[in-house]
Image (tube, rainbow, N blue to C red; front, side, top):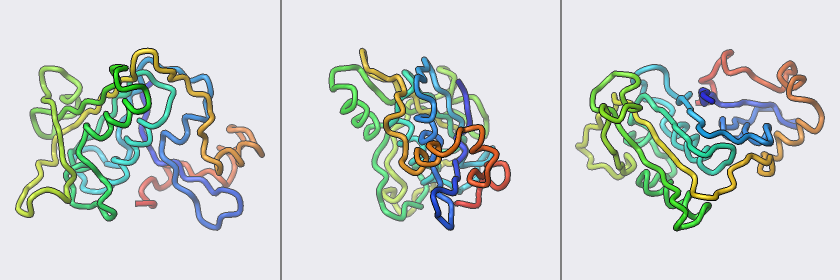
Length: 211
């Protein structure tokens, strides 16, 4: 399955404002999901280089890696900015893909073979290059706030993150880690009813208002 990681805004309970959930927070809504490969296109950046949404992309990847429903995850980003941007208010980004790989092995077992790799396109401004084995290079990155002050990040390159669950890992989505606010809404109405209600804000209406 291939999808775009649009943010998922919902008016929950009696909240006066909406809560922004990530794409991965919606996967528990589909118990039994058991994908060989889930391919996700970054929904926090427009096509090409747009220096916004760095933290949104970073935490969207992290949330997807923490969830289930897939055996292999491909996450495609049109820019390196999610790592190299100096925007990191809480200084919470860490070196990648080492950090994500460590967490996946903690989940599946140190000797399970679970891994996360990151590749960057060899050329600028060309969509699709990061997905090809002959047009990309392995990439390890430290977060932007640790870069030297005079560093000039080469933002305009596509990145793909490839995560693989460990041997024997149980990756079927069972719905058990659904966010409480989403669960309470679905206890009151079906997904079809929720989409038609005023609780759900389609991303096409204004997908960037939360940034």
